[in-house]
Amino acid sequence: GPVRLALAKACVATYTARPEGDWDRCGAAMALGNALYYAGRFEEAAAVLEKNLAALREHWPDAEEETLATEENLANIHGSLGRVAEALEINRHVF
Image 1 (tube, rainbow, N blue to C red):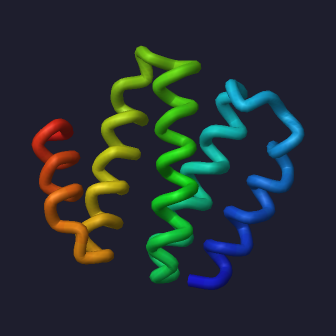
Image 2: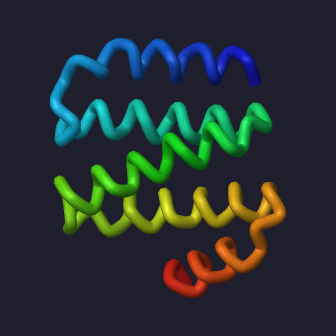
Image 3: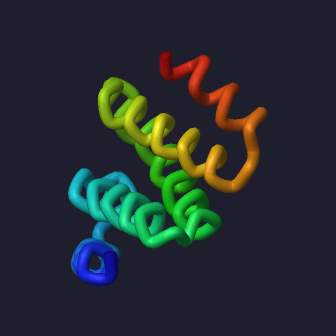
């Protein structure tokens, strides 16, 4: 709920000055994307997680577990937004 979202925003604020390739910054962004999703703010969550996914792929190509978790979260968001084709495409890759 709102506490989770506030904490995630505080984490992002703490790590935002670090380089994009910083692991803690990436983790904070993932927490924010998930908090936005749980708050029903799907469009914002998708934007945050898409950017986070790009950072994961660029800076940590071997972080398979985190990459797959982010992709799965994006699929859920697309499903919540009624973007069934996008959700299905991502899920086929994840599973």
